[in-house]
Image (tube, rainbow, N blue to C red; front, side, top):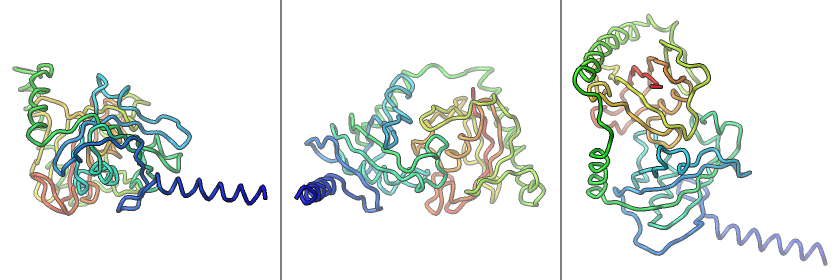
Length: 301
């Protein structure tokens, strides 16, 4: 009788768990920890969120409230199809279901990462706990961005900014020379290839032991070029401003997520990026569909 009761209790607990935990269309488990009343987010809106990443044993890997500069929340677009920048699509699958005040947990198997960040590689599953602080329409979000730009510290001006712009031109010329050598097979022996297909040449080592981990803020100066024709599609130096992001949050292409987990602070490198690790068949901005890319990157200290 005791075992019959225990079995029945286990069945009730399993049924309760199955009702609480649901599956996304892409097959990832999730559950609402807080399901607040309110109007759901619309595609194209922006969500202002806090994110905490833990293991199933509650080891904290990342907490945006303590690791984001100034405790600033993360800003993410509510777009379940937004994979063009290497974003974590299951995260967008659950974000599109939320509204202000919700807290939701996504269970993410580590073997589902194309290239698991080193900080999670030892685990089977990580949990993303996401609290939605606020929502913004595209126009409201642009107003927020403009307010942040107005409040941001002044960027280099005058001679310093001009020096960065000149450096951008010199780096672009250097990349074009390397592109010709790359297409001619002359760099094959110098390029290190990872399992994902990312290629890189490390041109300076930086500070040993200072690679970024999931949740780390990263500052980068870069020049990006299309392999097909040598056109520069973007660079940070002409803006005299680093490109800043948080590693492991899906804010950049998959190649950058992988590369900056390998590069020390202060390191410089040339990245050779196949299209599937960049913007894929969707393309993005000045990058056409299925474009292979090259980057000069400097992991700024």
